Length: 261
Length: 285
Image (cartoon, rainbow over all chains, first blue to last red; front, side):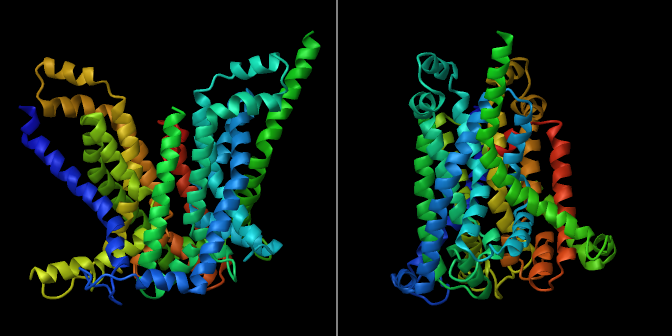
């Protein structure tokens, strides 16, 4: 009876429409990227790989892709250990100040990104880090830290610290007991946190707009400039590839997180 | 013995502080210092000055931009709530397999680059875009509609990007509402709609608050979407900041606008954190 009430039907219809609204724009870029047309026409007149070809044969796009991948990789390599050690200390320590530290590590999610971007630009301009690779990596480490901290703290919540105590009472030193006992149990959330930091660095645009330049411009910055000037279907091809990469990484991260419970 | 245990505790504290310090240092150098710098720059230029703030509060263009930003953020929040609530409700009411499917569809665009989605909306909404072409093909319109490069396009794309921030906290809150309570309501003779309004809706309010706060605050600082879809006419606060830096070299003005924006955001967070915990809100992404 309740199953077919008008309210129930309305709920289904509205939800379905909302889900279409959410998904359709993400999917629409795929047919556009395979279209042969110079300008947007829908449905595409014929299929072609020319925009993918254009992307892979353009040295500026390729250089930007290399920068993006390098920055994202370095970000993970630096942000993950920093985030793990901070999360470990926050969860183990009884110090009052840790609450404040925890809040501060979440700041990059709270401060509007445009403000962070302009602020970093001013500071970088003073110390000569504008348009450099280290500058770009450092900014992305800062932006990626909250994801690692949140993910690892969630993993540590289901871990019993007494186990590490046991290992230590059996004669292991602190560092070894962490690597032998604690880390294997929170491994999944560490990997998930790292993947989120990677995606965050791969997608980051606004800070890059202000502080990157010269040969160290990530893909997103070039895409933004290209989008502001004209709509080039090459961007559809890049978008499709980026989206596919993000989805695969998220899938990987979420199966990881499920394992850690 | 108390002496040695005290020493042990001090060493323990020292170790823990050492473990958080690298991450903390990155945060201090790359967000606390830069934001502090902005704040300083907004009041100091060859001496102390409040000129930058006076301009914000008196000059029309600043004032209009702040008003527009709050209006858009409010509209986006209300729309996201209206669209997000039914989806979260449904995800909570269907069997587990289906709810995973629904949540996956919600989270999917969440992890797509904001730029990619801006491009997608341009492709859909522009004069020669998919929607206009479809409507012309169906003979429903003669002239293409102006769907983008205006506030309409900005709002449509912004709601799209922020909707997951509404659905996820709503779903998390709804999941914790015990089904027994609904049954109790029904067994006492209340109709499904009455049980919903009197029992379910009030219990879901913490989720509503969390979702609305996230969406509103994130929207206040939105930059890429209005820049690409607003067509230069929808000047949100974030664009004031960037234009003052990039076009006019007005660092003081940019800093003052940034400070006002940041203070607004922080005040909202502080106000809301009296009702729900902040890390629960931020833990959604």
